[in-house]
Image 1 (tube, one colour):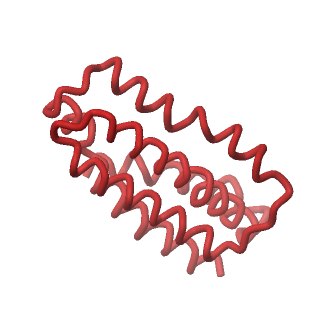
Image 2 (cartoon, helix red, strand yellow):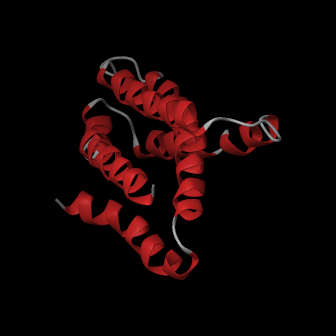
Length: 138
């Protein structure tokens, strides 16, 4: 099972890194200031904690949650494609990316450690966190 979810993670990660690699340059090209970019990142991570408290105690099935998280990420990238002339779309996309963080990354992280063996947690978590920078370089 671990190999299946790791392969899934790797393919999702390649698509995500590819689609979001040049996002900051896209923001600059569309006249989003550095302050606007900072607010974009704040708007991604600030809603996660209240949403987590609102959803606390609810059980979500892994597959639909992962698919919803992936769809939210794809929706965020799609919204940013229409950014030209509409700076407020940055904050719409940030909300979608916060849903991705909550529904994809939280569920996947739990699955990652659930399906790996205890004696391999260190190695596999190192590989888990090392893949993003490696793929970003390429």
